[in-house]
Length: 406
Ligand code: 3PG
Ligand code: MG
Image (cartoon, rainbow, N blue to C red; front, top):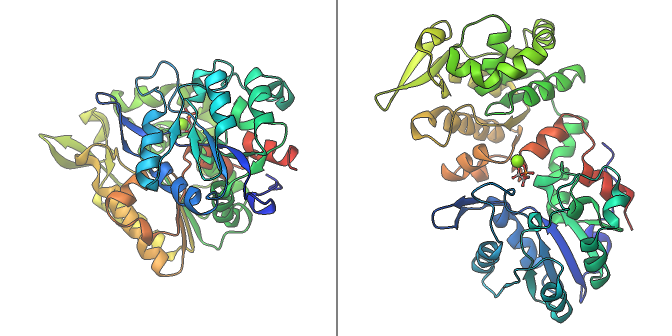
C-alpha cells in the first residue's frame, strides 16, 4: 500500500472552514441511549483542542449501521465531545439539508458543528470502488463547496468505500490517520525481528489470512493463535472442538479446508496453538485440555494457564508484537484473565524495547481498563481496518487520499 497524501500539516488551517470525516463509532448503552465508552472520541478531542482551535470544524461521522439497536443520532456524540473538550459543540439533526447548510454557513472560527449520523443518508454505504461516482452525489455536491478543506480521518473505517470516506473531489489526511500510519508503517515495511502476532477474537478466517500473508512476506516469526482462529485451525486438523464451537467456524472451514491444512503444514513450527482452554462451570473458570474440548461441548471462552505461559515466553524474545483480537471473550468477566495477562506481557516487552501495537476494540479496552494503556507502544483506533492494512491491502480511504491529494 503506497502512502502518499496531502496531510493537514501541509496546509494552513487558521481561519479556515474544514469538514472532518472521523470515526467516532462508540459503545452505547442502548437502554439509555448513552455512550458508555469511546476511546475514539478520546483520541479525537486533543486534536480538536490543539490543531483545529483556529478553524471552524464540521464533523461528519457514523454510529453503527441501519437496523442495529445502537444505530442512532449523533447528538450524544456531540455532547460527549463537548464534555471532554470543555467547550460548546453544536449539533444539527441533518446532514446536507437546509438546516445543515445554514449551520455550516454560520459556523465561525473556533466553533465545532456535528452533523447527524451519515449512515442515515441512504447513498452513503453503497460502496464506491469508482470514486468519481461518489463525487456526483447530492450530499458531496452540497457540502464540498461550503468548506475550504475536506479532511478525511476516519481511520477505523478506512476499509469502507463509503461516500463520505472516498467521495470528496479533493481530500486531506487528518492527524489520526497520520499518527496511525506512522505507527503501522514500521510493521508494514521492516519490523524488528523476531515479530509475533497475537491473534484472537472473531473474524477467524480473515485473521488466518493476515497471518499467512505475513509469513509469506517473511515478516512474521510467531503467530500466537487463540480465540476462533485457534478453533478453526484445530478443526481443520481433525480435532473435535465440540458442536458449539464448530457451528461458528463451520462455513469458513468448509470453504478453506485445504488452504488451512496446507498453510498450517508449511508454517507448523511458527503457528503456536493453545495447550489448554477455559470453560465456565458454575460461574468459575475451569481449565480443560484440547482433547477434552469435544466432550464438554460448550463455549471455550479463554486460553488456559499453560498457553498463557507459552505465549508469554515467546513474547519475551520478540522485538515487535502486534495484537489483533483478545485471546478470550473479554466482555465476560469469567473469560477475562488471559487478555489481561497478554496485555501485561506486552507491557513487559515494551519495557524491554519491543514495539507493541494493539488493534482496536476489546483488547484496547482491556488495556485501558487495567490501567496499562500507557505501557504499550500504541493502541490503534482501528480493528478491521488495521487487520486489512497488515494483510497488505490497499484501503479505499488511503487510495482515495492518494488519488485526490491537493
Ligand atoms: C468500526 O467500528 O468497525 C468502524 O467504525 C467501521 O464500522 P463498520 O464495521 O460498521 O463499517
Ligand atoms: Mg466493524
